[in-house]
Amino acid sequence: MNQLALSNRVQKIALLLSRMEKTVLSLNTMDAELFPQEYLDLCTEAALLSERVTCYLRNIVYATSCSGRSAYLQRAASVQGVKIIYDANTLMVELPALLSKKQGRHSSQIIMEPLNTALEIYVQANHIPRFRECTICILHIYDNHLTESIYFDYDNKQSKQLIDIIAAHMLIDDNATLCDLYQTAVASDRDCTRVYIMPKDRFVGWLIEQNSLDFPC
Image (cartoon, rainbow, N blue to C red; front, side, top):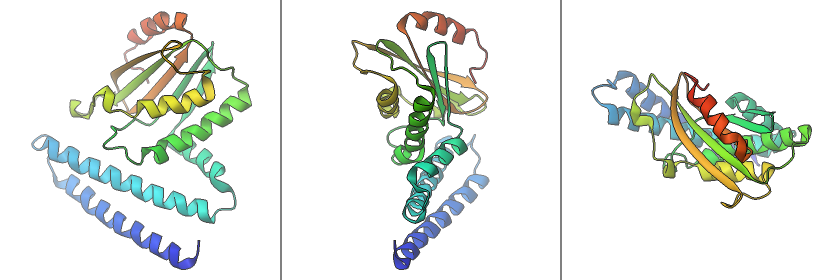
C-alpha cells in the first residue's frame, strides 16, 4: 500500500474517531432511564463506528505487517477474550456477545475472523476429533445490571455465521439430521456468548447443570 493510500485511510479513521467521540460525549450527558431508546441508539452508533475503525486499522496492519494476517488474528482473539476448552468430549467456545444482523454488519471481521483462526489453531494443536451427531447449545449471556432492551430476537442474531465457523472445524456436517440446536438468553455479571458442542446424550445432564447455576460465567 503506497503512502497516499495509507494517508487517505488514516484520514477516514480520524473522521470516524471524531464522530465516535461526539457520540460518546452525548452518551455521557443523556439520562438512560428517561430516554432509554435514544441512549440505546447512541450506544449502537458508537459501537458501529468503533467496528468500522477497527476494520480499517486491521486492513492497514494486513497490508503493512510482515507477520501476516494469522499472527494478528491470534492476538485479536486473545484481546477479545476468546476461550476454547475441550473436556469430557464437550467443546466450549466463549466469545464477545453477538450483535443482531442489523447492528453487526462488521462483526464477521471484528469477532468471527479471530475466532476462526483461534479454532483452527486449537483444533490442530489438540488433535480434537470432529463430532458426527451432536447438540449445539448457544448461551447469549448479558450483564444483569443493564436493561432488558439489550435482548434481541434469536432470528436476528449472527448465530448461523457462528455455527458455520465452528462446524468447519468441529463437525462432520451441521445438517438437522445430525445436529440439534438449543439457544437461550441468561443474565450474568458480564456480556458474552458461549457455545457448547456435545454428544446428544450429554445434553440433558448439561442442561440440568446450567439451570442449577446462579451465573453461567
